[in-house]
Length: 486
Image (cartoon, rainbow, N blue to C red):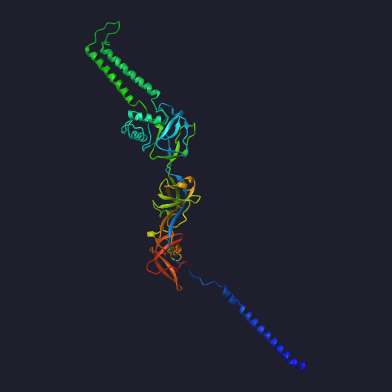
């Protein structure tokens, strides 16, 4: 009985297996069919998307435009100093003068300081606009004498009236001044002493000759020889001649006496318009002769000399504040004290180009560029600068309180100058998005609903590749997509 009942069950199982296999094969075929592509479908899938403009979203933010450069740190107002004549008596041989004490490099010189010594004599520094060009002594007059008298008074050695005339009071003050510094003022030399003695002897001889005539001697009689008495007319002529000779001798002595006394040799004083100064470079050797410049001095002011491209230079103005960063990262404040001109840019060989872009190449703050006749799409990107980048602009940054920068003289520093900033958040677009028409009008192209719309704009400051824009007759808002390329 069990064998009869098992026949139908076995067949049911076989049928179920066959149906399962067929179903599995069908599902596998369907899956395989959905994953397979024809060559045409594969080529279509690899085809590049349809070309379209490259866009960037309009943003709203604050914008600050800066000019950045590397500059050389220097002391200001360098000037060379040469001595105007011999040191010591003018009768000394200049070729024998030797440097016996060198200027001290880095020293600060105030009024009355001793710059150096030559043959044991001092070379003083005084304040005055008129250069020392001659020896000053009794009988001298002029503006150089006046500034010497003013300097003596400032140093506490009153010369009397500041009249511009070198007289006894000035000579006495010079003597006291030299003595306070441990030196002797220049007294008359051997040649002057001999000349004075000769003039005094001439006066004495003329006086004796006149006395001899007045006492009856020299009346025409010769010792041991009898001659006719001299007429009264001849005697009178001889007396007049003797008196005239005495007058001339006295006049010569008086003129010499007026210039005889304590003097200031031409090489012993250097007048400088501004003091104090610092010794920067010593150009003579100990024991060496005087030849040309003896020293270079500077002011104690610290400056940064730099150069920037012409486009950046056009945005700068004297008086602008600057941040000066030292090599070790510390900051001090500076001021733009000079733009262009001779004497600026001495550190130009170390100055770098500005990394900021002020974007003010066009008129009235509009970026300059090409026009619709220049080819391409008929428009040029904003920020195209007509200035020649090969013609840099030198500038000088003064640093009123140099602090750590004083120890950086001879090195370089980074200078950052803010040339403009928006008061509030403004709409900004990449500089490449702003186009300029042949009429000089700025505009941007905005993608809306698959179309490109031109929106006129007014441009403002530019910085770091971004430009401030304000819609001028159209709508523009943050998030709008502006065209920057194709």
